Length: 299
Ligand SMILES: [Zn+2]
Image: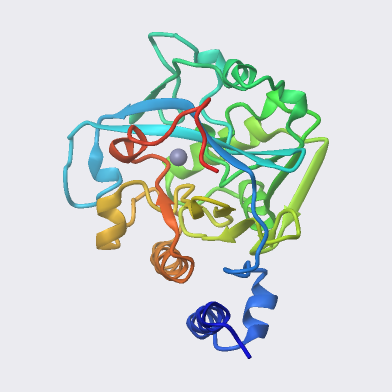
């Protein structure tokens, strides 16, 4: 005889399968975690990985807010899984630390500042860069891979599509071309590179899952983290920059594919509903400022 809780759990999984494509095969194929019986990671930290000021909000909200200033947060996340550590994105380069001139990916548009180094923040909880086994990157824009050089012995995990894209010929958008050139420079040639294709269960237990969300760049990804007390948390990467854009399906002009961007936002909405997930938007400063910061953590 099934207990009411088991029945509710089974119905939950069934609803999820229906939502995500109809059959259990759909979950197995897509490497998505089991919402009830999936594993958990122990801790999720937010690191302050910079903040920026852009002089034209309309790049992120096309046809609106031309010439208006906008501030963004930059965050990195650190996940503890057993004795292993996974870093999600690496932020603005440490060379920009306390430099009043800041640092930029697109000097005419945006300037980044860094008040705390990644190394110092890791040290606050007793870690050195060498303790980080894996560094997964949402995508290759400079504000996300600025400190990859601090982790020469870590395995860099990224989508094959992203890697191929930055090594492909230039396209029509000069801003995008500049970002690709900077990406090649900052990525360099990692000693340990894991190129993945689509959704990927990082630890093989459903606790941490890379979710393919292309559109901002061709191999962009988000990260779904399962924690015991906080449940599922979905880390956006740059699938959206602002809560308002997410609500209105607005696509920044820097994105490489508008239709893919909209499809990825829709996918994120489905995942949030299916996993009752909390959604942390990396660059949305008004949300980020309210979230726990290392040494505090979500568990
Ligand atoms: Zn970004």
